[in-house]
Amino acid sequence: MSMKYQKNKDIEDEWKWKYLVRKYHEGQSITRYMENDLSQQAVILLFNIENKHEHVQDWIRNHMNPDLEKKIKQSIRAKRKRKSNAESINERKKSIDLEYLVWQHLSKLAKSLRSTLSDTIMHLLEDAEEKEKYEKKILSLKKDLQSFILNNNQ
Picture 1 (cartoon, rainbow, N blue to C red):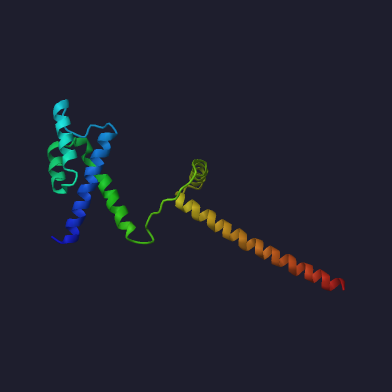
Picture 2 (cartoon, rainbow, N blue to C red):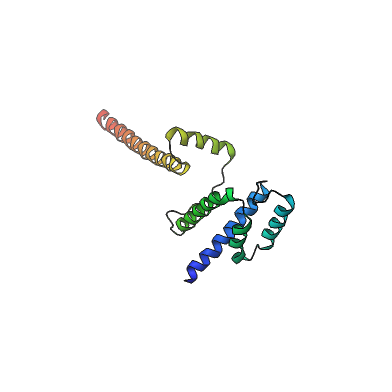
């Protein structure tokens, strides 16, 4: 087993631990137990293995609510894809700080264009560049026309 694979396994175990803790804080039932005492003991055990990634899989196998099995796999698969994409500069996601009203307006435009927010921003930037080129061309044509008119009047 290569170190890179082992490191990814540790990272994924950490992601699973964080996923379970987040779901617990959101009020979801993360354990398979109906009895409150057993559930609380399992949650305490989960909190105690925070930095012991090798125990996360055991906890999941022994205590996790079976209803979360598919969801946790989907979450980890998505995180793995985002991590892989982040290694490629072209796929790396960046966050931007938008005021809510700006985001709302952008979101409506994206829906009307049936595109993502990123594609919509690119569309707006390309439109702005085209408008600037058009305005420069019109300005140049106006100058040429004024020059032509002045030369013909003389």
